[in-house]
Length: 371
Image (cartoon, rainbow, N blue to C red):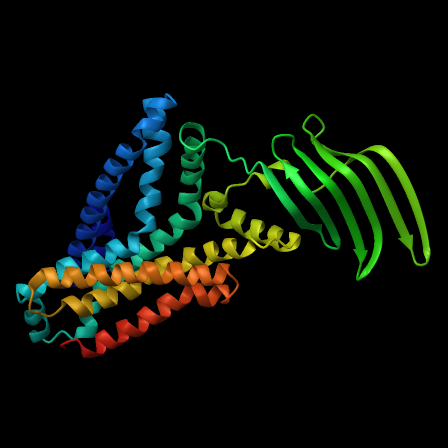
């Protein structure tokens, strides 16, 4: 905390700026620490039976799970903790008539917002970096712990009617895939040159050979088409390499939470190539990692505009309004994301529309705030 303040002081800010920044960051750190402690207590009470049943060692619980749970949970709600922090300490300043004294001294309301936005920008940029590079690494350890001691490994025992594009112009189909046997049934692969079919393989099943890291195709028929000429061949066994593995059928829905910026970017490109319908979920995650930290700036402006004047009901009224707006933002973001996943709304529109809506609210509150 002191190191952060020293860095801010090097910007040659005024005493008032340092005063507000210290209150902002101090309240934020205090509130997020308090909430994290409460969250950990509730999480322990919920999972204690699983820890005991699966004989999870104490070191793994502390190091592999909770030390990685803390940054994940903290960054996930950092923008909302920022909002509540702004509401709390600014309303206290307002009720001690500090805001009135500051404005009466000749400092404009716009200038008053400068230390608020500097603090919010620091939190937002830190959250963005954590979202893309720190949290994914923490989630890998956290999810691995959960699979071992809480939920078990992902199964999805049988997938049905699988269509994938594994390379440009190369499509595979399986009627079903068993994760127990690492075997796909009623398998086919088609290769196109433009819209013209050039190659088609049909087989009873395809099985993963872990020793060779290859697929073994059984009882197959191959059609090779060259214009009007067609050649058919048959066989019982054929080893082949495909750009998919059994892990692609066992991946959890929340696996994208353990992907950093580059891994998620490559995964989205791979899903688009394969024609996966789940690519929308990955794109929503990618855009959320930008829009959620950015909302810190919007919610900060709303918080200052709401709490910089006295209202009947005191600080409790400000905190109540803050919590109401916070949960409204979360619900709005979840609803709009589901519309994108359902294909009803463009991904970028769905993820950013809550920020646009709340930005309009922020501008209105700023306009009517006493200056």
